[in-house]
Every structure is written in C-alpha cells, then in structure tokens.
Length: 178
Image 1 (cartoon, rainbow, N blue to C red):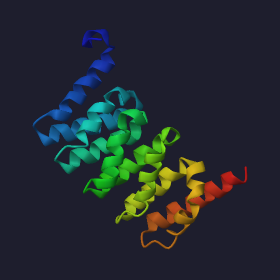
Image 2 (image 1 turned 90 degrees about the vertical axis):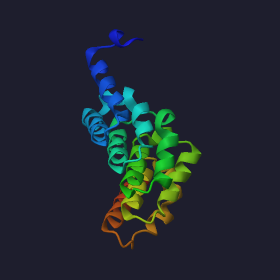
Image 3 (image 1 turned 30 degrees about the vertical axis):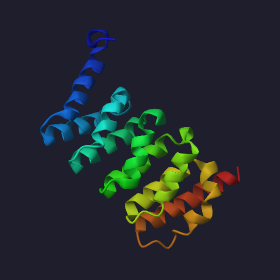
Image 4 (image 1 turned 120 degrees about the horizontal axis):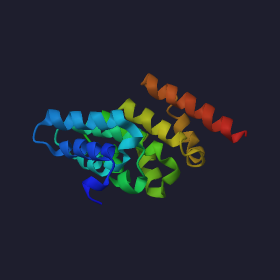
C-alpha cells in the first residue's frame, strides 16, 4: 500500500515516524513524544519506535519507550527490543518503561518474556523493580507463582517498590479468592 492509499491520519503519523531518524536529536525526541501523545492510533508506527530504542540519545529512547507503553503494540513487534532494553539499557527510565510496555501485552507473553520481567525484579533501580512488579500483576497466573519473590520486596528501600508490592498482593490474593 502506497502512502496515497492510506488515510490522511496514517500518512501524517508515518511522516512523524520518519522524523525518528532525523539528524537532529531534538526532532527525533519530539517525534517520539508526538507518537506517545497520539497513543493507540500510532500502533502502525511501533516498528519505527522500536528502532528508536537504539538511538544514542537517552531522551529519544525515553520518549520512544513512553510511546510504546501507550501504543500497546503486539509482543511479536516489540517484545525482543523491549526485553533487551529492560535488561540492558543504561537509562533506568527506559528499563522501567520497557517493563511497563511489556506489562501492557502480558496476555501475549511467552516463558522467555516472563523470565525477563522476573529478572527485572532484581534491577538496581527501584523504578525498574516497581515497573516489573506492575507488569507481573498483568499476568496474574504467572505472578502468583512468584508471589513469595514479590513479597520479599515489601521492605525495599524504594517507596514505589513497597507500594507496588502492596498493590500486587492486593490484586493477586484478591483475584485468587474469586
């Protein structure tokens, strides 16, 4: 399908996504931010956002990871890249948003994805641990299997982690009673 076969909104979004490769970092960051603001309607641009996760500039990777959380693109499109950044990106914000984006598509997880999210529970940064806890609650059957691990974070030094543990226990033990 050529650009003129697409609706005007799709053409505009594609033009925005093309700016993710602009030489100017500010243009790339703004393009990712615009796709974040558009949300689910930008799902067709998920591959371009996944490519932006490899940008050398942290602000671009952060904005692209934020957009992928909102877009909720299929795991087949985003999974490998989100798993990689969740485990290895030097930005704690990008790692956390990798976990959050994976949580949005938890119903599509395979065992490897679940294992990687579980590993993120041990991340050195609290924001990532809290995001991984939330992501696990989106896959309740898997999360219940590791509930002792989640509960072990109840005394974490990071308030967001402690809150995430409380919410996870409430959700997972509450759902288990239903």
